[in-house]
Image (cartoon, rainbow, N blue to C red; front, top):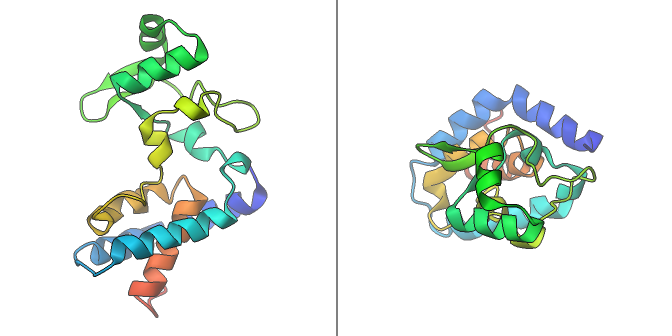
Length: 168
């Protein structure tokens, strides 16, 4: 992983309680155009962060997979669906199908996804900043700052915009 990204993740861990507190507070409001502002912040963050120089989400938390995600992934990678499900996934009551162990079985050594074009929707949406009503889901963003340097940058931009002057 890129050293600058590691530094961002360390900074995020140091500021974790602050981030969670601020995003929880900001999540209580219904700010006009918040979704658009958050999407813009996401675009800005991903101009700075290259997932191919990171891959931390794939190494640490992995995707939730639907039945359709599993079918697409197995077809794209040439796997037997039943065998893949039995050996690589487990059923979580709340999340659905998740990887038994990390890193994700589709993460290549170069931090690219072996099934990128057919990746699970959860992967394509991560860190979930393009969704409607995102302000009510800022707790999830706070959680993702622990794993994703882009999520950390997005969170800090949101805090700077909507809670200016608060630093700790």
